[in-house]
Each structure stands twice: as structure tokens, then as C-alpha cells.
Image (tube, rainbow, N blue to C red; front, side):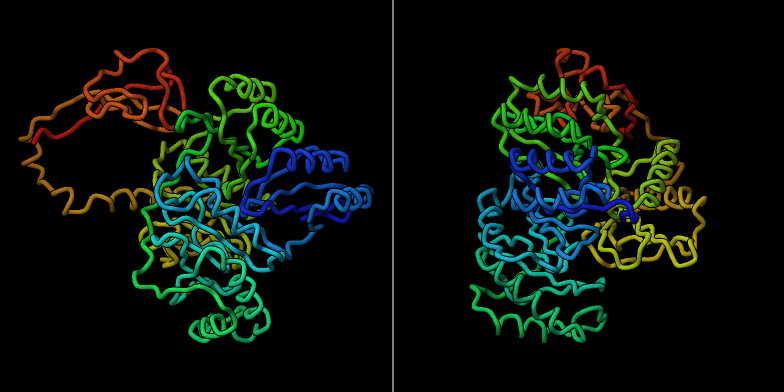
Length: 485
């Protein structure tokens, strides 16, 4: 956290979004207090550091602007939501912008426990990283409730779905029950969930209906969340910083351009990045100019973007950088995987693969049973691993994961003799060197209107990657080999 001469200021962005005007005011206050950079946290909140001499002036400005904040503390965790994913990472289901905003507007208190509002059609926002997790059901305006009692790792599903408008009421009552009965529900691995839910629904008059079908977790896929990307007739822009730090001057320019071009909101993500939606194609070049002005790269490798690290954790950040370098050297595929580094006990980070520091400074490597980060059934892969051996052990585990995808039902095992007798058919596909998206002429590119059977070399030079918007020149030919059965 902050040292004796500095103070860490935390501002929650409920739901993970802020209007351009509100964020600009926060940036001005931070800048006037001597900050030059800010960062975003795992729960979509905002941090910056100031020195002790500036604290009193900052307090005055925050009071004037009616901004809630905390100094060197985190008593009120931010409310996380999957609103950022709406329309760009999921088009399915009933949960849309208005529902998120209506729910958030009904919160009349600052939560002391972690609350998540998550669409079940996306995997960009973790499902169970909160203490009170509301997950959209398939029935319109109804939600599952999953409780993870504080400082425990197991979650319990409510026997009832609840209506959208009752979420703040249920969250407030659940928090009160837990904090008023810590001997039953706080840091208690053997908590009685049946008693808890009985108390909860006896104390509230919520609109409920019984759970008749269990929540189905979607298969995990972390979308490439950087760069310019097309959706509908607009663009969205994702910006990630390797050191987690965003210059205030840069963000001020972003806010001003949002206001100029009528982009209403900016979004923070649990991956410590930001996303701007609704960019009109006519002004895309202006956004490119801002990126060039601050020399910002938006073409990081996918295996650098799929990490969760504790907030304000230099040790975790440096370890991540070392491991990413090893992954790059090994040309490692990490598709459908994400990693979490835990240097402190009982942090709520989720991941397919967990690197957990023990009390002796060694590391345990765990993974979920099906490598889905939204699962909580962890399996220990290795214990007491030296830091220098972490990279090789993680690379081996990733290979194990990818090998496990080829089961006998989907991919019949052929003996060596049979394989030798089969002729091999070779063809070329083209792969984006930035996000690894592949163009295969057998399928074409429906997003860009390219028909199946179209050779890549016949596509116009204005072709862009449908995932990260890289130009045609960023695609490299690779050999596609398949058995001609």
C-alpha cells in the first residue's frame, strides 16, 4: 500500500463504468493533488497515490465534488458488473444496459462485502469473485444468488431466484446477516448455508421463484480485449498497460475526445484495462492520434492479457512479467486459459491456473478441475515450487491441458502403421501475429463478408483482423496439415 509519506486513494466506479465528465473531474482532482498516473483494480475501481502534504486539499476537493473515496483502506469494495461486456463480448440473453443501471441506482448504501452482477452469457467478468454473486438466470429479470462467505473459498447457491429490482435489498440484508453473525458466517469453512438462506428470506420481502434448473457455466473464453474492434456499425477500443499505470494527461485527452464525439461512458475491466465503446468510424483516426501522441501500444500478445494479479502488488506484477517472457520464448499457446498470482492468503482472485505463494516463499500451482476459472474445484498440480522453476512447470501444465482436449471420442487414436499409410494434405492458412486469429479459406470470414473458398491473397489490402483489427500485412502464412481420411 502507501508508505508513511504517501497515501493511496481509492475511488469505486460502481458497475465498472463512469461518465466521461465525472471521470475527467476525478482526474483533475488527482492531478491537482500531485498525482500523474492512475491505475485500475481487479474490481473495476480506480487508484492513485498522493503525498501527505496534498491530503487536506484533496479531501476538500472530494467533498466539494461529492465523490466517495477511501484513503489507505478498502472497507467498501466496488460493485463489479459485466456491463462492460454488453454488446461487444455477448449479444445473447436479456440483460442489457438499462437493467444494470436500474439495479445500481437502487443501491442506497456502500457495501462492505464484495458484490458481483454478472451475465451468464459471458466469460469476461469472473462469476464468483464476490462474496454475494448475482448471476443472470435464463428467465427474464431473475438471478441466481451465490454466496461465498468472507475469507472462505466455497460458494453456496440460493434455493430461490430473485427479481432484478430486489438485488440491492437482498445484498444489504445478506451483508447485515453475515457481519452481525461472524461466528456463524465469517471466516467459517463449515458455515451452515441452509441457516443463512432461511434467515435471509425470512428477513426480506423479495419477489422470488424456486431454482428448478442449475446454473450452466459457459465454457471459458477470454476475448482479446485490446485495440480497435468492430461491432455493429461502431468501434470499441481497449487499452491495456503492461505496468498497470495510465497517465492522467492521456486519460484527460480520452475524456475530452469522448465528450467531443458524444461517447458517454468509459469502462474499467477486472483485467486492469479500460474500454471505450461507441466510437464512430468517422472519428477513429482521432483516437489513433491520441494513442500515437502518448506512444501507446495496443498489440500485446494474448498470453500477456490473461492474468489476474492482486491490486498494488509489485511482486506479483514482476513475477507475471517474468513468466510471460518465458511463455513467449516457449511460443506457448494459452488459449482458453487464464492465470492468477496470489501472494497473500485468501484473496478472491480466480483463474484456470493459480500460482499461490506459501509462507516459506515457495509456490503452489493449482488448477480447476476443468480449467474453467469460474469453477471452484481446485486440484493441486505441484507444491513448494521454487520461483526459478515456475515457468517450466506452468508450461508443462499448459501442455497437459491442451493434450487433454484430444479425447478418444472426438479424435480417434490411430497406430503408427495406419498413420504412415494415410496421405497428408497440406494447405496454407494465415494467422494474425498479434492475437493469433486464423484465416482459413475453407471458412472465409463472415464478420468481414468474405465468402468461404476465398484465397487470402485475393482479399483486398484494406482487410482487417475481425478480432483485433490488425491490417492484412500482420497476417503470416502457416502450414495447415490434415489427414486426408
